[in-house]
Image (cartoon, rainbow over all chains, first blue to last red; front, side):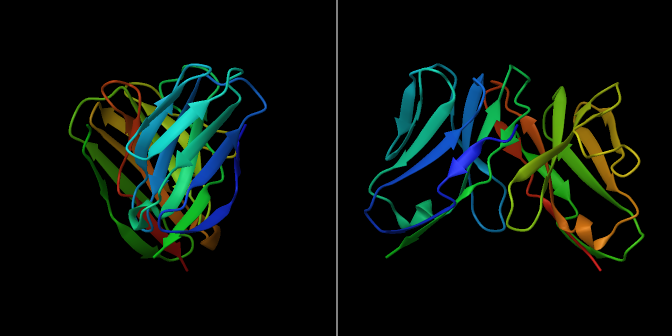
Length: 111
Length: 114
């Protein structure tokens, strides 16, 4: 089942923050986050495996709730380079990274 | 990290013809995945290609339309058969990283069917 992503699109000014959510009707084994720039392949950002987990690097972080049904991606002090489409990819069970992707969130950061 | 070479990068094809997309990985991998990304849409898994066995297709995708070969642990092909304009999409191959914690994607094949 495809996870539900929200919002579908976000427009930010440089320096502003954004939150992207990814929800599943079932408990998940893992959540992956990817960013895709126009005309390019998706690029891995991070993976969350444990309920209650939070992780991140630089100004991009993510959380996985205790029930493992929702994950959020946090973009703080956004930069122009953050523009792109963000996808969450989920696994219901350990299936070797056979992911089901959400519908995507288009993020545009303006100067 | 895995380096994936996918070709062609783009093609324009006539209705009713077939196109074979190649995916070469710089290391041996057990599983390779083929995804389709329709214009402005998300990525949808077409099938999982395992070396030495038939590919496993997701709901809505059939072998006659999307035959897949996996002759060895570094190479796979996806054929889009009897194409129609509805097949116009980006097709991406992907493989798990060595730590099995991420997917690496090829650069994709942008297919336009007239």
